[in-house]
Image (tube, rainbow, N blue to C red; front, side, top):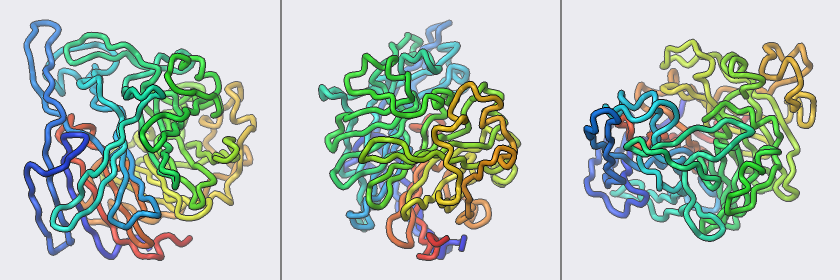
Amino acid sequence: MRVPVRLCVFSIVFLTAVSAQADKRNDRHDERMDIHSSVFERPLDIVEFRDATDNSITRLKFTTGIGSSAFHFPGDDRHTLYTASDRGANIKCSEDVKITGKNICKTGKIFPVPNFTPTIYKLEWRKHYGWKVVEAVQIKDRSGKPVSGLPNPLTLTDTEAAFDSVGNPVALNPNGLDTEAMVRLSDGSFWLSDEYAPSLVHVAPGGEVIERLVPAGIESDLAGADYPVKGVLPGILARRKLNRGIESLAISPDESYLYFAMQSPLANPDKAAYKRSRNVRLFKLDLKNMVLVGEYVYVIDLPKTFLADNTDKQSKVKVSEMVAYADDRLLLLERVSKTTKLYRVPLDAGSNILGSRWDSEFTSPSLEQVGDLDTIDIVPLSKDLALDSATDLPPGALPEKVEGVAIMSAGELVLVNDNDFGIKGADTRIVRLRVGRDFFKN
């Protein structure tokens, strides 16, 4: 079954890390789709951008992006949701004039609010009010100091230069995290994924980093971090394309295993392979022994099948989120921008390639260069389409750039988008889908 029987949409604009009360409310009910919208507005920051040539100034207002992930803890009621931010507002130097109207830098990223701290949010749905942030947990180092979202000083994989809003260089930070996916455990701690290293980050209930797991070898680059860094992940993951690290994360129902997937194929051996490849690596981590026990190949769809996006670029297709609905059973989100697909993915039929020659940087052709997996005796993970927003939902029912999916109850999902901190004017929208119990059967 692919078409949900009921759709509820809650649109939220967050302009601070914590929105205790709404400055302004705009509630509406659409009888045709049963759509409910609530708008919350509070300023995060108004930033001045100065042109490097004539010193002229532009002021822009930014919002707090809370939707890089979504997770519902099974012990909570169906009106409680956890989400997380990413690294904070950032603008490509190549787009500085287009977005700010000012010539600020040449290569790298502008961080308009460089002191922003990646944060976990707890939200509750309240009748006559909507979603409300009831707790914000800033991620901290072991000294209790908030970490930053600034790039890491990496040498074994690529990184990017950072600048403030007036073009001054900002120092790279070994504590910096570009957080994406997130799950909460029964002990109150969290696991988050990070795109920089890429890495997995274990965080205490209060936000302190317990440990960060990175590809083997990367730990030497992050020796200056004020928390433990361990080279537990396969070294081949250092070949991730910049800004295409670990984007999705899921926890098994008994909390024994953590599943995670790369956002895109690796740039292995080069960016040309990344641009053409459809082979994304997905992993299974034994949390008790802190050892990987599985690596699988998930084949992403062709770009032309994302009907609302009109692109032929394979690199536009991304794996942005997943959630486990049973042991070794994942609901995985593929998207471009305007089109969101959800697939049911069992792990038991796919080939486990962990520790094989496909984890070696010397293997040629690489896994990412292989078009037909049958020729190398690899069985990819099977995938069963559960929802395609372009065909199963009314136009505009989902926002662009959906990056969070949570199972709220046996027949209900919540999806949330990453609004990129409002750089291009997007709002955060939380969408509730009533899909029925059969949705999770495959």
